Amino acid sequence: MANVTASMVKELRDKTGAGMMDCKMALTETGGDLEQAVDWLRKKGLSKAAKKADRIAADGLIGVAIAGTTGALVEVNSETDFVARNETFQDMVRQISTLALKTGGDLAKLLATPYPGKGHSVDDHVKETIATIGENMSVRRTASLSVGSGIVASYVHGKVADGVGKIGVIVALNASGDAAKLAEIGRQIALHVAAANPQAASVDQLDKAIIERERSVYTEQALATGKAKEFVDKIVEGRLRKEFFGQVVLTEQTFMGPGGDGKMTVAQYLKGEEKAVGSPIKVEGFVRYALGEGIEKKTTDFAAEVAALSKSS
Image (cartoon, rainbow, N blue to C red; front, side, top):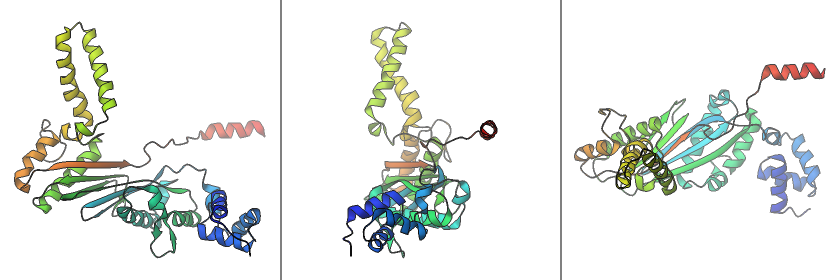
C-alpha cells in the first residue's frame, strides 16, 4: 500500500477541488499515482467543483448569527441569485454563520471547522454543495464582535430567510443597564449602519492616513482662497468635523432612526438614551457586509458574442 502523505492529498485537492477524505481515498486506491487519482475522482463524480472554480461567484448571501454577547457575519458567494433562493444554500449559510461565532473572524479556522453531522470540514462541505447544486461557491469572508458587558445587535437587509440576506450588520454596544432597552437601541444603530455605511465607529478608530489626506485637501483649498494663515487651521478643523467626520464616522453622522430630526448625531441619540438604559452607552465597534462589494463582475455582450461567432463560421 502506498504511503499517502498530507502534501500528496493537498496537491490532489488543489488540482481537483475534491474533498480531503475523497482525495486521500483516491490516492490510496491508485497506489499514490496523482494522475490516476484524478481520473478516479472524475469517474466518481467528485471533481466537479474544480470545473466551476474559475467562474466568478459574486451573488449569494450574507449570514448573521448572535449568541449572548457575541455576533458573527459571513459572506458566502454563489454565481446567481437563483441559488441564493435555494433553501439548501440558505441553510448552509445560516449554519456557517453560527459556526463563525466560535472562530473569531478567522476565515481559515472557519473553513477548517467540522461541519455538523457531515464528518468533514466547512470547506469540504461547500465543495460538496458545489457538486450538488452545480454552481461555483465560496466562503469569502467572516467577522465577529464581542463585548464583556452590553449587547451585540444585528440587522439583515434584503432578508430572504431568517438570518440571511443581502446586507448584514452587527453592532457592539458597551453598557451595563437595561438589556432589553439596549437591544432595541442596538437594532436602531444597526439599521443606521446599514443605510449610512460609515467607515469607523469613532474618530479615534478612523485611519489616521485618511484623516491627514482630507486635512491636506482642505488646507490647500483654504489657502487658495487667500485666507490668512492664522485662520486656515481653524477653518480646516471645522470642515473636517462637519463635512468629513459627519459623513464617515458613525457617532458623528446624523442619526437616521426614529426620533431623528435631521440634526441629531448618533452620539447625541445614544446620550439621550442613557437615562432609559441606566448607564453610559459606548459603541465598541460594528461590521457591515454588503453582498459582492469589491468583487469585479464579468459583463458579457451577447450581441458581440453572436457577431464574433458569425464571423468565425
